[in-house]
Amino acid sequence: MGAGATSAEMEHVVARLQEAGAVARVQRGRDATVIGAIGDREQLATLPLEGFPGVEQVVPILKPYKLVARELSPDPTVIEVDGRRIGDGYFGLIAGPCTVEYREQTLETARAVADAGATMLRGGAFKPRTSPYTFQGLGPEALAILREARDETGLPIVTELMDPRHVEEVVETADVIQIGARNMQNFLLLSEIGRIDKPVLLKRGPSASVEELLMAAEYVAKEGNERIVLCERGIKTFEQTTRYTLDLGSVAVLKRETHLPVIVDPSHAAGRRDLVLPLARAAAAVGADGIIVESHPRPEEALCDGPQQIPTAEFADFAAEVRSIVEILGRQIG
Ligand code: PEP
Ligand code: MN
Image (cartoon, rainbow, N blue to C red; front, side, top):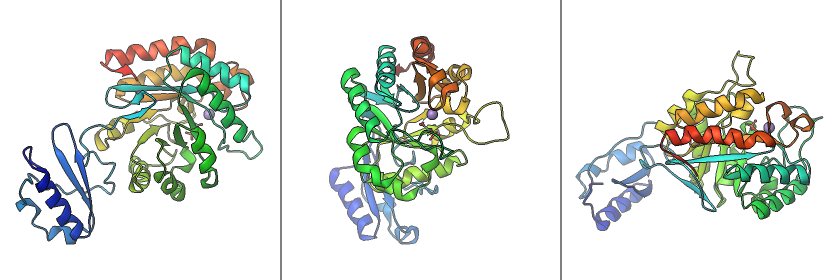
């Protein structure tokens, strides 16, 4: 809509779009108001939209994703949880153990990362493990420990939801619901969390393209939940020296394609502690809106992903290194 378009003109456009069977969504931005129309292309083409009063320009969105497309919402989305922000200049520093093993391990980690300036606490209660014979997470007991960690440190909780049957109990504790790499294309789960009023951290599948990640986010957004953070965590390639190949190019592409914040998980991508800091710095430099990192008081005793977890004793130095890159870019830890 043109800069001087009136509310009546906007309402008129919306009404006509709806008559043509489209879903119309008004997005008031910093510089312009965009009315997004999602519906049958042929039918919409019959509307003389460009001639309607107040309309400046009609732009077809050719991409298969719409709600998450930058064209529809030119301003970046900021996800805010209890005063912690991710996106548009605010860098989220999410840290914590791979998995909640026992109370002291999680509380110790929570205190260390909170003291070092982390903005949210991660920790798996339900773990997607490659082998059915390995530790699968403490489930509800872990959720109780995470609540205690939040009460003590004030850090919002990021934890994974694996199964639509666990929605109620996980949502009760999680401040941000993580959908793990393996569930990125679990479309029933995506639709389910699309109907929930909590932010979602959606991780890229190790074999998923950038477009598939955006389509997964579109599943969530289509149901009404548009508070989504995307996460690059490495993809499968022929390379064996890192656990996955961290695709930082995808972050640069995503920042152009979508208004959603994009963060990076250097821990799972690296698979080894000594590479986590360089990858985290690179993530900040490429323009990511945050990182999610694993830390453990005694990584050598960890039940899961020990080799990549940063010892809590070293976490403050790690955070300071990341912060310096974030600040060079004129951003701040959210
Ligand atoms: C995790 O972050 O706990 C995790 C299991 O990562 P991913 O889904 O990326 O493998
Ligand atoms: Mn892990």
